[in-house]
Image (cartoon, rainbow, N blue to C red; front, side, top):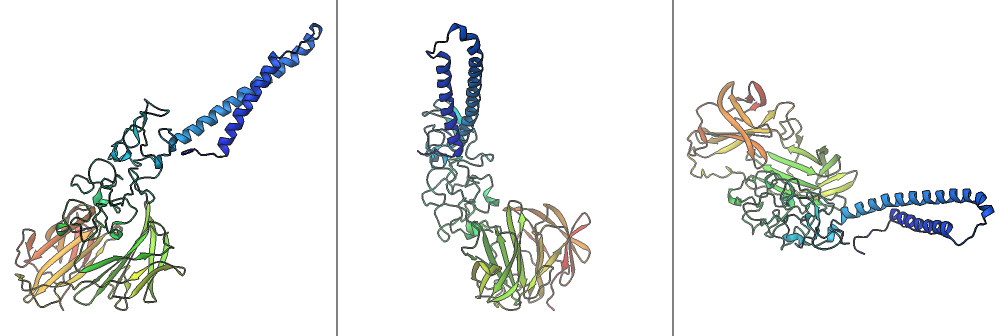
Length: 483
């Protein structure tokens, strides 16, 4: 029978109820039977008969009380899995609250007035609409909406990643509509959600991360944020800027990898020949993992607990210049890579080929500053900042020397910061939230051509750089030099 679970506790309740019935029959027979007791024996027999009657009454009452408590527990347990008590478990019930509206058309799947069944006429469930941030399990199937195991969030019998599923959270707004800011209804705005469509795949590893049935290459708005990919700095909302000079790929998970885990490899090759190679992991078990490229162990990827999930990151560079960076002794492009632990491979793949870095050719692209060969130096974050804190200064060199400069930071609190060059303040850097990331940038040009460019009228090549706020240093370093 759908929704019925027969376990040892239920069996005990049945035995209790049978025992009660037998006790009442025995009591009735003993009290009202046809046995005739002589008058001269009545004094002798009445007392023990009264004791036995009281004993039977007490046993029956005790068993009845125990059965009532146990039965209520079974009913409560059953109702939590079968909200409308129609014998169909919520996980497979096409109308969870029996209000006459199929789950896919019901704006509150697990709350409404029953129109039929044992609870007819009663309001059951919650009063939270599907799009209410407090609604954490829309179809009341026991699986949180943001869990990797929940593959049909609104309980309409269509998987969230099915081509025909146009409204994943059943809130009445189509997934690709500009007003839909939480496609999977998990309470997380899509701009900060690692799994926008709630199909259990990370955005970076999902060919259709917004669940609109259009894969990459056919979708002009990959992440469904209402901003076309041409104008979006992070097409798939994976938290990584779509830098034209770097390439990122997801490594393939083996059967040993935990469900919902992933590892990404990102590579960037600068015009100077310097190579930056990063690996970041999520939802692997906490511990150290070997990064093996072309059978050579280059170092450890350490995964730690970070709130409800685990994550880890390791950076390799051909010329390490920051704490934590590991040496990259060879060009890894096109070579096989494995992420393993104790001889067990969890992820593998091939290091991708990055695009040609801007400035590699001899064209100046009509740049007013006479070209633009960039050199970049990382800024060192102050101790105590988060692992996400990063800063850099990039200098562009033209035919007449320094042509422009760009200073960029991320991962520090929102606010205004002083940009100091050789101890002198040259500008104010404002950090704000951009697609869920705290970022700030200043752009200087010898000949400004856009409204966001500032006149570069000071020396910066090879000078000391500091980013500070109210006298507290957040980043420091030295601007690159062509020498």
